[in-house]
Image (cartoon, rainbow, N blue to C red):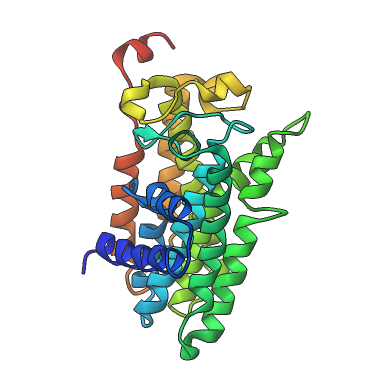
Length: 291
């Protein structure tokens, strides 16, 4: 089964459970809206790829982990778009959840997705209980305080920003969760995989900075110029376009070199290269000439 099918199937199962019983219709609908159609599903794809490289001896648990991670990511996007944060009208080429439904329903949608993520992991088979507990801990670490995506968002309210801590938490945390949880799903030590996730996260942040600076709203599927608008630090402002592109290439090379020895090392390196091609923005000629 293709990775995308595994991920989408597990995600649909989780959403359907959240829509059961006496669930209010508008909130149940918003759960679908916030998670479909999905983006590139980069984080769960990395998770499943790492698990496969490590043997993937418990595929059902891997699929649960992938769904849980994507639910957290989708929740973070719903909350990021709220008026109290980015106040973004678009997400993935369609109105953001608070625009399509309402601000209260958007808050509840994000909250519900977070709870659903941990519910998915808590329902793992009894034989997978020890690994599931490790997955819950890993996802908790990369979601909350002091080093998760909540901390990353919190840094934006500080008078002075620790740039390394900000990027590592806001963007890198869920990529570290992806590699750590992929290893955990297959019974491998997560700490050996943290560096790979951190480097992929750093690469994604630089690529996102480049897209924010270079692409228009139609191409990006969300508002552009958000870093400048909100006074956030970014690689393009620090290094220029060409410098940021060079930095991105160096980070991706380091990510491939950091892959631990494992049975599927070659295939995993190929996956990282493929993801690199997807996130590498095409720089317009005018942008190059202006640097």
